Image (cartoon, rainbow, N blue to C red; front, side):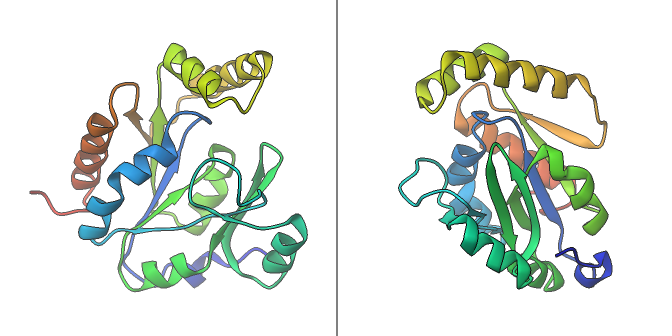
Length: 197
């Protein structure tokens, strides 16, 4: 169910739409920044995914495909998309947070970015970027995919990276999480999401 963009733009909050290739460390970055973001008043949306609760990865809410479809039909999602064979939903609660003037961080999808921008025109798009060799090592260590599938992911990522979008802010996560978290907070201050220290 698609919603009119005017429904969710009545507040002054800003949506932070985090994107990046699988294995770039979006989940790890969010976990590492969670306490500081909460202390700064930034809400973090918990995704609903058609993946078993036992699956490794982010602290998402796992549902069956049937449950997801029921939720979607009921209008439970502010945003939803399909990627890598899974369905992802962002609960409508984010619209309430934004209407209350709160900043909200969403672990998003590059493929959904254009549609997200239509709904939230002032969203802050942040690309978590990783050097190809670091990304290869992380994907292989994760063990979810074969070596061939990892190479396909890397090739797809290279193609997507070649399509430059000046409105997307790159955040390098090739080094330590501490460096990436510091970079995220510097970006949020520079973009006026958080007050300057």
